[in-house]
Length: 431
Image (cartoon, rainbow, N blue to C red; front, side):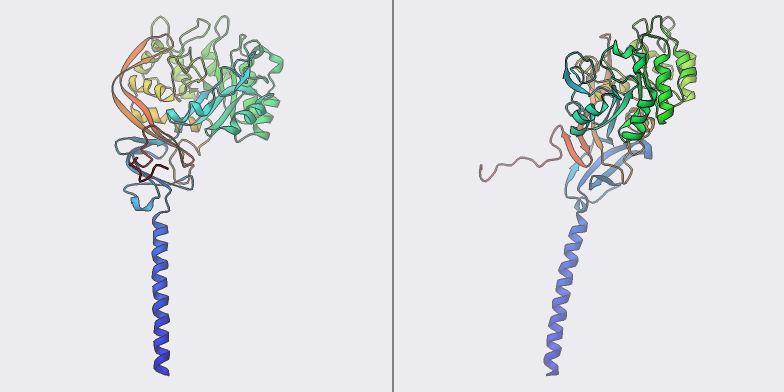
């Protein structure tokens, strides 16, 4: 009897051990595939974290879970070979106009000149678009309901100091509709997670509009971005930089050359960058590209870069009048700065971490572990390319950035050549 009991105990012990081994094996297999998406073998450029080398990037539950050497492919459910490509944080376009709509009387506030964001973002590597003042406090909620809430692209916004936003040039002159209190209230109390600053634009007078925007900026503790170019005669940009704006405020359309009612940063006669421009940058004034359909000229950009001036942020000023002209898209504008002689690392910095800091969103523009997995994979093509400014002049270059893969919150949203999907094979059946 005792012998039989020993045999039974041994059988149960063997069975328990067997089940434990099976369980441990299953657990090992589960742990082995905790990573949802692994970008393997690419050259990572992450300016915020000082990374500029070959690394693997692991994504789990929509977040960056690791950036390291040789992450095992067996740890991932899905592996994408990005060898020979550049992996960067998701690109931030800090100046665009995406409050599109059908109001035929309007310009950029629910008008025909705004664009649908998802149609232009991911294909150029952009994961975050900042709308530059298309709406004001009166119509921002329509913009949110109509566009922001239905976009895969992350949409943030500068709120126009004019209540009706960029409805039209006439409406943008209405001093009675420039309300710092209501503007600041909407930013600070209602939508602080979306509204990142205040826009002043297209004003025909002196500094009234800018000063109203800065007053709102102080109340809401956010930066002001200024499109400063329709004054008769031109107002002083030195006074704008040194007197009216605060450190952290933004001057957009940095490389605009004309119309004649806009003062340029490079002297029109000597071709020399005005000394106070460097002083303003040291003071903390942010210089944004804001290419657009009429605000980027080689005659300004080439001498400025040659003389050591660098814009703080690169952006498109995307709208219907710029998208098919010299601007094209964000990757094209970034490539222009490669043609101007900026290293790739500086171009990525000015398209990721710099704009994230300017709009006070340090959670963006980085591949830090734990951050949302917005990632761009670029192919840096070599060849003979031509880049066109708003005056239809071409500058030749030998490098061009093309967005190969874009990941938004851990999900592949753009795959130019299908590198993230299995190859087609002849099926057994054709159902």
